[in-house]
Amino acid sequence: MSTRKAAVRAAASPLTAPSNGVALAASTRSAHRLAAIRPSRRALLTGGATAAVGLALAACGSGTGGSGTSSTASDGTVTVVTYDSFDLPDELIAAFEADTGYTLEIARSGDGGEVANKLILTKDAPLGDAVFGINNTMASRILAEGVIDTDVALNLPDGAADYLAPYIVDDTPALVPIDFGEVCVNVDTFWLSDHGLEVPAIFEDLTDPAYKDMFVAINPTTSSTGMAFLLATIGHFGEDGFAQYWKDLVANGTKIDEGWSDAYYTDFTAGGGDGAYPIVVSYSSSPAATLNDDGIATTAALPRTATRQVEYAGVLAGAANPDGAAAFVAWMLSRDVQEAIPDAMYMYPVDPDAALADDLANFGATAEDPIVVDPDDIAAHQQEWLTTWAQAVGQ
Image 1 (cartoon, rainbow, N blue to C red):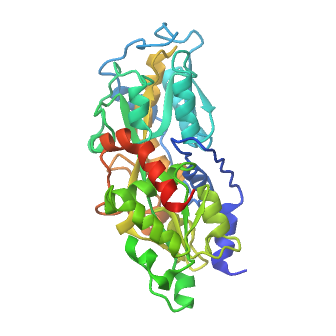
Image 2: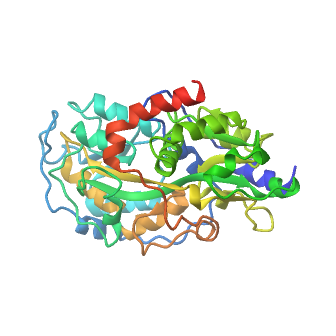
Image 3: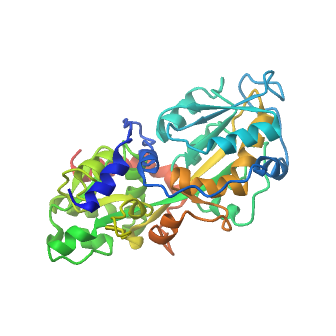
């Protein structure tokens, strides 16, 4: 086994990535964050939770809906509904609990799409006090359904407000940006070089016969990664052009997998298995997880195909412990947590002054001008676009 594939196989071993058919799409990208090769953690201060709570509450109501009415849960517990791969250092969680007096309970509830659907279905009897992991493809619906307590507003650190507009319809800090990533095309640079091929650069390159039978994409109806890439093609080609692009991709031998893990770890040539496709939809952070023994990334991300995913946290309407929930959300914006996120979850912090993990800083550069689709358009046309896509690819 080559050192290139050995490194990625070692990264892939703990992978578990559920996939389902919800229209909101599943957050299979979460699996990548767990599977990514992580550098050693930097030393973490223990006073961050107190500073975080100091950011809090411009307003903190008892909730605008549901059955919760008390301002503080009787047992002092803060229940956070999130996706399965939520991961922060134990010492930070212990610091939060010591500094606030709350006990933090993490209610892992599947992938991101499942979390969103569960919160909507249970909004009158909320599953917890706070939510983390709602991304910008789901945010408009979550806000429209009244899942988030919009009477709660937090003071955001400098730079964090940049991740409200233009990513969500309701430009309110009640849904607080915490971190972000970028979905984009990734390529196996070693494979392409070995076969005498140039690295593609733009969407149109993927329909070139030179890359026939080399690209694996992801179904947007079953994966938030796939949904993000679909939005990128809509942003690039327009509503009148994206369907033809997908027809051209299929005609050029593009394979469409149900989830990110199948695409990356099974079909991608640099995914650690026996894949046959050297081009895949993944993340701008992915190359940082493909370093060989010489410290060289064996894959590359294509920034001109990138679209941004922002993840948010908020207080749930009807929360039993809204004060504790607001303290949790504020804590997620603390410098300690923001600097832990790249190591723990391989996402980028919204705090521009937070340090990045070395591998991510060196091999996971974000795009200078990522594609952004207007959130009003996503809210109004998402199901229509999914139907058009399915017709274009013959599904």
